[in-house]
Image 1 (cartoon, rainbow, N blue to C red):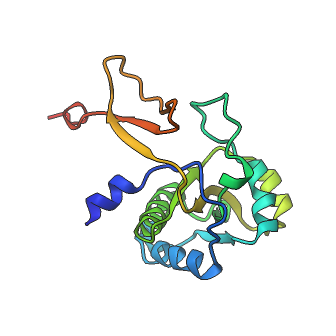
Image 2 (cartoon, rainbow, N blue to C red):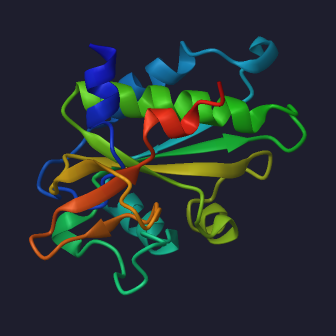
Length: 189
């Protein structure tokens, strides 16, 4: 069911690095993106797939992991992602490319969840360094990076407490907690 997929589709930041992804797997996720809605049906987004170790190592250092956890430098080598999908767009291709990016990203992550995988979207990364290190074409800029793999952590949704803080955190047992607002607090009428 869709609601079950949405509940399981969390931002995972630790993965089982021994569970290798394949190009076919990544292509199946982009197929979900390809079939998704696109503003004016322009389909301006392009995708760069990475699953080979050398490419993974070129991408990883350019990502900024877990903004609410500044003491954590990101996953250790044995917990790093085993796949990435970079979403790119030509400059000026559409005024709605960010909307399209959100739509295709959710489609990719739901498809990954359905396959027993997990992922994390990165809008905080070093675009120029990624562009250079991956020798990406000048005709496209990196808009978003999705890290993928088999999750190696538990992520738990919980109600926001009386402090009102939305900051996620990891407890002493390593469980990643994600506070969510109550439905009644989101509805205006």
